[in-house]
Image (tube, rainbow, N blue to C red; front, side, top):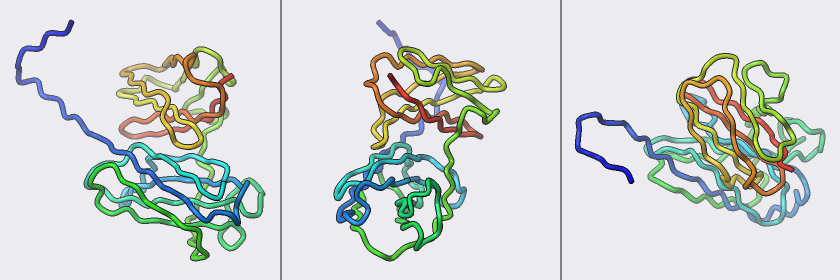
Length: 207
């Protein structure tokens, strides 16, 4: 039971929305890897990133967009299968613009040959990057996310290759954060840790 009495200790709550992108006509890239990111226009802040295997029709759900802001939705198919981004036409890349978010948003993309050089890097933090690390990996029950120093107001989101969120966790003033993943089905996931001045994304294998 929680009891609340009116007071003047107000909290600024920032509501975030979800972007859904529906892909169709992707037959030329069936079986290839699609890399996808959402970047806030003006600041260049990356709010979401994932990758998935391409099928003729599929969808990606991206949390984290905010009302009143605008975003670039960038994605490319690794057409030459070398595991890295190359400017078109070596890889096929596109950009959708999302202007002045009003709330949860759906975009529909139909395959075309109007490519854009999105200059996309891999962006996934691996365990040799000194800013943060996640272990054990692969994991079964509990994983730990360790930073070099205490981090304030950390939001942790665990999502799968389609962008579906499986866990959301909040912590303040911690250097090592434990995340219970026992209820998450086995598979490949991304664990994003974000705060006021940082954002890292780790790839995690759940056994």
